[in-house]
Image (cartoon, rainbow, N blue to C red; front, side, top):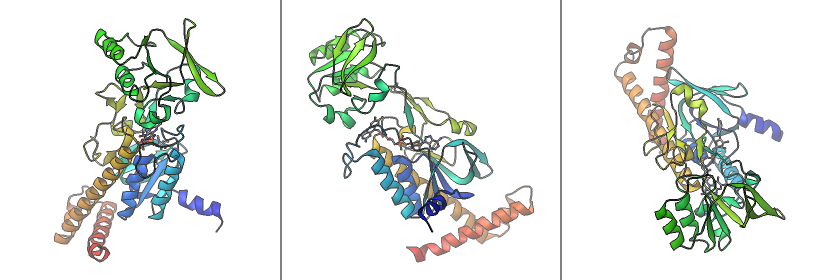
Length: 362
Ligand SMILES: Cc1cc2nc3c(=O)[nH]c(=O)nc-3n(C[C@H](O)[C@H](O)[C@H](O)COP(=O)(O)OP(=O)(O)OC[C@H]3O[C@@H](n4cnc5c(N)ncnc54)[C@H](O)[C@@H]3O)c2cc1C
């Protein structure tokens, strides 16, 4: 079989899975890894645009410090596939409940079904409309001191005020450089207390709207204000609002709410990633926009384990019902159609097989 045929087979969606994971970043792949290793049928559907794609490396990640984001995810996809999980390129358009299952439709019209969903589609950074900023995002325009602080240490940093955490961000970046200025941009001026805190740490406040970046030989050299002034800077720190990538969840009634820190919106979940909609788990930036790669991967792994536990509970319940009375599951269904009977008895039989096989596997 030639390589392209193998890839096509790997990428072809089955009709049904135990779990469909929507989003194949750190959270989704680690969730899928747990599920595939738990011998669950799992497909990761991934649109292929992880949030940190522009960055040259993933930092602050034990064991893989500085690895390019694409390489980390490529390894993850290989690990998931190594246990029989599928990673399928594609963009989910709509998700709907259909009986006990979820119906998942992709933008290109492909469809599949799943008993449970793990949603890890992340967030979008809403970059401000400043000439040149998008091109430098993740390179010398950065948002997180733990991701990039070391790389821009001792440089001239301008902190662009975009939200309620801007002063906090300036005080943070001061840990990495003693040349930090606070650019008020279009935000309300800092309070008297904040000005005092900034001044105490040697951070001047520059009032005025930033309209463009100055670039020299491909590298940032300053920011241009509307009044024409140019403030020489070799790095800009900016924390834009983040917005959940989850419009496809509308049909389930799962909608984002505002984050308490004022950084954007998020889908609330419990400690294990359980959302307000039964059968749907969320992990990674979609439920915690401030999580880094390691924390997102860990949350995905936790959610994967929780989903597996939930499926085991369901299978044990069906197996017990079937063992006590082969007709009890049927009795719970109304109307008593032949289809409903065959579905229930089929599931119970498969659950019985799963339970009876488990001791031999362990
Ligand atoms: C510029 C930048 C640099 C960063 N650097 C670091 C760093 O050095 N270290 C660090 O720890 N963290 C870093 N981060 C944070 C890091 O990006 C996040 O912690 C991480 O990406 C969160 O993982 P996730 O799986 O939740 O989401 P993502 O990585 O964003 O993955 C979500 C995936 O879901 C897919 N998706 C979205 N919608 C759909 C859909 N409808 N159907 C199918 N798939 C969909 C996307 O295409 C994407 O592939 C950085 C962030 C930024 C913005």
